[in-house]
Length: 417
Image 1 (spheres, rainbow, N blue to C red):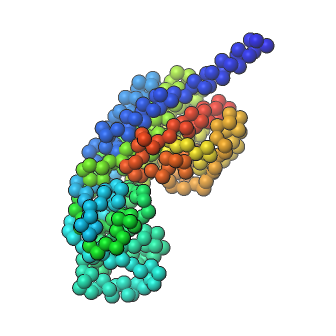
Image 2: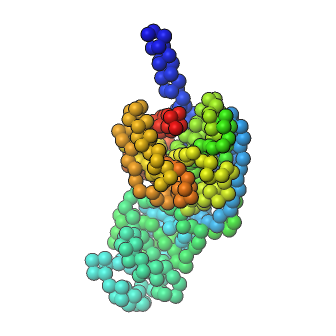
Image 3: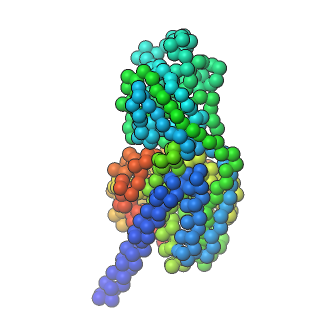
């Protein structure tokens, strides 16, 4: 009995020591530092981060690391980024940001507020033809414009109306997105908080953009060989983020997604020390924030046949503290979802797994639609979630609670599958 107890304790200690929280924190801290300027597609931020990860995977002891290059077209904002409302200077990234496909804008403009309670498109176009609203910025709540996008899409086009651009109000903390930045529309579109623009009669803007054509990025692919090569497991996370908003503001992206990237680095180190039965691939994608460009390229040009993937784990934004773990599962992966639930219950990792509808919201999606068994793990709606896609997603707001349970959920699943 004593020998049996010792064996059980040793096995438990091995499992508890498998994850490496200090290593996880070290990688998160590095990737979210000013050195990489938000890991965006200008100032070489994403590519510098990718070269750092190449070195980290090699230090982890993997068998091979390769870089998979691809190109994107992307709009960026690394120059002037200033805005005033009735002479009051607004803060980039806090009071305002830019729609990802906006051109630059320079000048002073009157503000025309949309009357959403008495919405009348004909009256709006009549008003905007008046001299006092020549070259105005049309201001409206974003979600209202989304519901009436047939009208507001006209206001974005040159020649359709005399307005200079649009101001979309969004409740603080204000977000910045890059997903549809592969084009530039005719007129500038600015996100702004309702408080910053309330009652303003005029705004002044000095914003530069730069459209990058065929900008080179790369996925970082690490491999740990197993005893069998007929099938494999794949671990993915995106290491790119939003980059810069002007010359002074950058988005650290500690939770989104330095956390997921750090997790697959520590998983690579674990399997390099504990040789697995099957080959393991660890893929750090770039271009996720530009509409899943890196993962889509990999799915179209896989380094291993997709039909050989036993399961793919996509880890995104696990730097949070919600005791309920959000996930999405592909149709091909649902046959093993009950095993995830059983592992979670066995090890008491999360209060529950909350499975949402499959969506094109992270790098699992290009694989899910190609029939690959996969799961997307994201710890959302915790105390850090409110800061994602803001400059406040940093080491002060990230939470470390979810790393160890996510690590144990994945490794125990593989043990049993």
